[in-house]
Length: 193
Image (cartoon, rainbow, N blue to C red; front, side, top):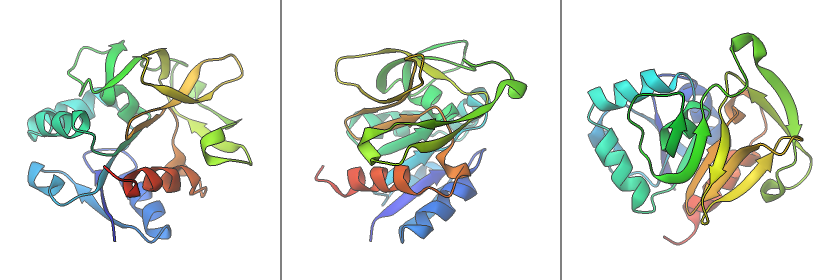
Protein backbone atom coordinates (compact mmCIF):
# COMPACT_ATOMS: atom_id res chain seq x y z
CA UNK A 1 0.00 0.00 0.00
CA UNK A 2 1.26 3.47 -0.88
CA UNK A 3 1.78 5.98 1.92
CA UNK A 4 1.08 9.68 1.36
CA UNK A 5 2.12 12.47 3.67
CA UNK A 6 0.03 15.61 4.04
CA UNK A 7 1.86 18.71 5.25
CA UNK A 8 0.04 19.50 8.49
CA UNK A 9 1.34 22.95 9.44
CA UNK A 10 -1.85 24.83 8.51
CA UNK A 11 -4.91 24.43 6.29
CA UNK A 12 -7.30 21.61 5.50
CA UNK A 13 -4.85 18.73 5.94
CA UNK A 14 -7.45 16.65 7.81
CA UNK A 15 -9.78 16.87 4.79
CA UNK A 16 -7.01 15.73 2.41
CA UNK A 17 -6.26 12.78 4.69
CA UNK A 18 -9.97 11.86 4.78
CA UNK A 19 -10.23 11.87 0.96
CA UNK A 20 -7.14 9.67 0.69
CA UNK A 21 -8.64 7.26 3.23
CA UNK A 22 -11.79 7.08 1.02
CA UNK A 23 -9.44 5.94 -1.76
CA UNK A 24 -8.03 3.26 0.61
CA UNK A 25 -4.66 5.03 0.75
CA UNK A 26 -2.58 5.27 3.92
CA UNK A 27 -2.21 8.98 4.72
CA UNK A 28 -0.31 10.61 7.55
CA UNK A 29 0.27 14.19 8.76
CA UNK A 30 3.77 15.61 8.23
CA UNK A 31 5.20 18.32 10.47
CA UNK A 32 8.87 17.38 10.86
CA UNK A 33 11.64 16.43 8.39
CA UNK A 34 11.93 12.84 9.67
CA UNK A 35 8.21 12.31 8.88
CA UNK A 36 9.00 12.68 5.16
CA UNK A 37 10.92 9.38 5.25
CA UNK A 38 9.17 6.32 3.89
CA UNK A 39 6.54 8.28 1.97
CA UNK A 40 5.50 7.64 -1.63
CA UNK A 41 4.05 11.12 -2.18
CA UNK A 42 3.21 14.40 -0.46
CA UNK A 43 0.29 16.84 -0.48
CA UNK A 44 0.80 20.50 0.39
CA UNK A 45 -2.59 21.97 1.37
CA UNK A 46 -3.77 25.54 1.05
CA UNK A 47 -4.36 28.28 3.57
CA UNK A 48 -1.87 31.16 3.86
CA UNK A 49 1.31 30.76 1.81
CA UNK A 50 3.47 33.16 3.85
CA UNK A 51 2.56 31.44 7.13
CA UNK A 52 3.07 27.93 5.73
CA UNK A 53 6.39 28.99 4.17
CA UNK A 54 7.58 30.50 7.45
CA UNK A 55 6.59 27.35 9.35
CA UNK A 56 8.34 25.15 6.76
CA UNK A 57 11.47 27.22 7.31
CA UNK A 58 11.13 27.07 11.12
CA UNK A 59 10.74 23.27 11.04
CA UNK A 60 13.67 22.80 8.59
CA UNK A 61 11.45 21.40 5.84
CA UNK A 62 12.21 23.70 2.89
CA UNK A 63 15.57 22.28 1.74
CA UNK A 64 14.43 18.66 2.07
CA UNK A 65 11.08 19.26 0.34
CA UNK A 66 12.83 21.20 -2.47
CA UNK A 67 15.29 18.32 -2.92
CA UNK A 68 12.45 15.79 -3.06
CA UNK A 69 10.51 17.88 -5.61
CA UNK A 70 13.53 18.39 -7.86
CA UNK A 71 14.30 14.66 -7.63
CA UNK A 72 10.91 13.71 -9.10
CA UNK A 73 9.08 12.90 -5.88
CA UNK A 74 5.27 13.04 -6.40
CA UNK A 75 3.78 16.21 -4.87
CA UNK A 76 0.27 17.65 -5.18
CA UNK A 77 -0.25 21.21 -3.98
CA UNK A 78 -3.51 23.09 -3.55
CA UNK A 79 -4.07 26.86 -3.39
CA UNK A 80 -1.25 28.21 -1.17
CA UNK A 81 0.61 25.00 -1.99
CA UNK A 82 0.65 26.10 -5.64
CA UNK A 83 2.34 29.33 -4.53
CA UNK A 84 4.91 27.41 -2.45
CA UNK A 85 5.85 25.05 -5.31
CA UNK A 86 6.19 27.77 -8.01
CA UNK A 87 9.52 29.13 -9.30
CA UNK A 88 8.19 32.68 -9.53
CA UNK A 89 5.49 34.33 -7.43
CA UNK A 90 4.20 37.88 -7.62
CA UNK A 91 2.85 39.27 -4.36
CA UNK A 92 5.05 37.30 -1.93
CA UNK A 93 8.34 38.09 -0.22
CA UNK A 94 9.02 34.79 1.54
CA UNK A 95 10.99 31.78 0.27
CA UNK A 96 9.25 29.11 -1.83
CA UNK A 97 10.36 25.65 -2.95
CA UNK A 98 10.86 27.03 -6.48
CA UNK A 99 10.53 23.54 -7.99
CA UNK A 100 7.81 23.92 -10.65
CA UNK A 101 8.44 26.05 -13.74
CA UNK A 102 5.43 28.30 -13.34
CA UNK A 103 4.86 31.93 -12.47
CA UNK A 104 1.98 32.43 -10.05
CA UNK A 105 0.01 35.44 -8.91
CA UNK A 106 -0.91 35.16 -5.23
CA UNK A 107 -4.50 36.14 -4.22
CA UNK A 108 -5.19 36.64 -7.94
CA UNK A 109 -8.95 36.93 -7.58
CA UNK A 110 -9.06 39.31 -4.63
CA UNK A 111 -9.94 39.05 -0.98
CA UNK A 112 -11.91 36.45 0.99
CA UNK A 113 -15.23 38.01 -0.08
CA UNK A 114 -14.23 37.44 -3.73
CA UNK A 115 -13.98 33.66 -3.24
CA UNK A 116 -16.08 31.66 -5.70
CA UNK A 117 -17.04 28.22 -7.00
CA UNK A 118 -17.16 27.11 -10.63
CA UNK A 119 -17.24 23.95 -12.72
CA UNK A 120 -13.98 23.18 -14.53
CA UNK A 121 -13.28 21.02 -17.55
CA UNK A 122 -10.27 18.90 -16.56
CA UNK A 123 -9.65 16.38 -19.38
CA UNK A 124 -7.07 14.47 -17.29
CA UNK A 125 -9.84 13.27 -14.94
CA UNK A 126 -12.68 13.02 -17.49
CA UNK A 127 -16.33 14.00 -17.27
CA UNK A 128 -18.29 15.44 -15.58
CA UNK A 129 -16.77 18.86 -14.91
CA UNK A 130 -15.07 19.26 -11.54
CA UNK A 131 -16.81 21.60 -9.07
CA UNK A 132 -13.90 23.77 -7.89
CA UNK A 133 -13.83 25.93 -4.74
CA UNK A 134 -11.56 29.00 -5.00
CA UNK A 135 -10.71 30.79 -1.73
CA UNK A 136 -8.28 33.74 -2.01
CA UNK A 137 -6.77 31.67 -4.80
CA UNK A 138 -3.70 32.14 -6.96
CA UNK A 139 -3.59 31.61 -10.71
CA UNK A 140 -0.89 30.72 -13.22
CA UNK A 141 0.61 33.71 -15.04
CA UNK A 142 3.32 31.81 -16.92
CA UNK A 143 4.18 28.17 -17.56
CA UNK A 144 7.46 26.72 -18.81
CA UNK A 145 7.96 24.23 -21.64
CA UNK A 146 7.73 21.15 -19.43
CA UNK A 147 4.45 22.22 -17.81
CA UNK A 148 1.04 20.93 -18.92
CA UNK A 149 -1.84 23.22 -17.96
CA UNK A 150 -4.62 20.86 -16.84
CA UNK A 151 -7.47 23.37 -16.40
CA UNK A 152 -8.33 26.94 -17.29
CA UNK A 153 -11.13 29.29 -16.35
CA UNK A 154 -13.39 30.49 -19.22
CA UNK A 155 -11.19 33.61 -19.56
CA UNK A 156 -8.17 31.37 -20.32
CA UNK A 157 -6.39 31.76 -16.97
CA UNK A 158 -4.62 28.57 -15.87
CA UNK A 159 -5.72 27.14 -12.52
CA UNK A 160 -4.22 23.62 -12.56
CA UNK A 161 -1.00 22.23 -13.99
CA UNK A 162 1.37 19.27 -14.01
CA UNK A 163 5.12 19.06 -14.45
CA UNK A 164 6.55 15.57 -14.16
CA UNK A 165 5.17 14.17 -10.90
CA UNK A 166 4.15 17.55 -9.49
CA UNK A 167 0.52 18.70 -9.69
CA UNK A 168 -0.69 22.14 -8.62
CA UNK A 169 -4.29 23.26 -8.17
CA UNK A 170 -5.39 26.83 -7.45
CA UNK A 171 -8.55 25.52 -5.80
CA UNK A 172 -9.50 23.18 -2.93
CA UNK A 173 -10.54 19.67 -4.07
CA UNK A 174 -10.47 18.55 -0.42
CA UNK A 175 -13.53 20.71 0.26
CA UNK A 176 -15.64 18.57 -2.10
CA UNK A 177 -16.60 14.90 -2.07
CA UNK A 178 -15.16 14.41 -5.58
CA UNK A 179 -12.22 11.99 -5.30
CA UNK A 180 -11.01 12.24 -8.92
CA UNK A 181 -8.12 14.68 -8.47
CA UNK A 182 -6.75 12.73 -5.52
CA UNK A 183 -7.17 9.54 -7.59
CA UNK A 184 -5.33 11.25 -10.46
CA UNK A 185 -2.48 12.11 -8.09
CA UNK A 186 -2.42 8.52 -6.84
CA UNK A 187 -2.09 7.28 -10.46
CA UNK A 188 1.04 9.46 -10.70
CA UNK A 189 2.34 8.07 -7.39
CA UNK A 190 1.79 4.51 -8.57
CA UNK A 191 3.53 5.04 -11.92
CA UNK A 192 7.20 4.09 -12.28
CA UNK A 193 9.70 6.61 -10.91
